[in-house]
Length: 135
Image 1 (tube, helix red, strand yellow):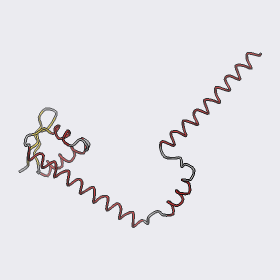
Image 2 (tube, rainbow, N blue to C red):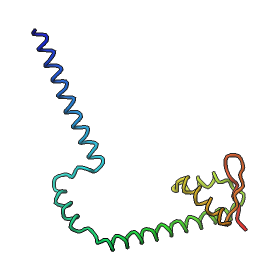
Image 3 (cartoon, one colour):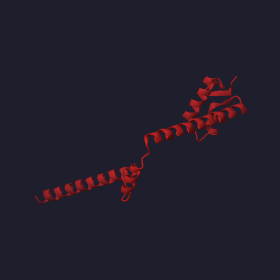
Image 4 (cartoon, rainbow, N blue to C red):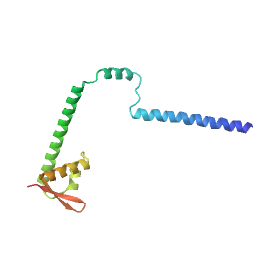
């Protein structure tokens, strides 16, 4: 009977510490996700909630962001066009190392659009394409 009580105490303590560890893990994950506001941020959150922009301001912000995205896309296209004009016949895979800050998928998309518009030519060679200026 004594060993049974000791066993129950050990199992109970194990369960208690397991639950405690799970709670701590949830708090850490929530903190990492930015879901928990630390003390003092509650007031800041209330002030920020009062200062939310009007819907018209939000639309203006989205318009400005879209304009910036278009400018960046245009400048990327012009930079790609310059590279292709300077080195006709270069492999598309070489472009990825020239523009390491731009994702490979984005570069592929822009190059395909430029080829569809006729600004460049893409000729399949192996697992890549050879790029040359369009007509």
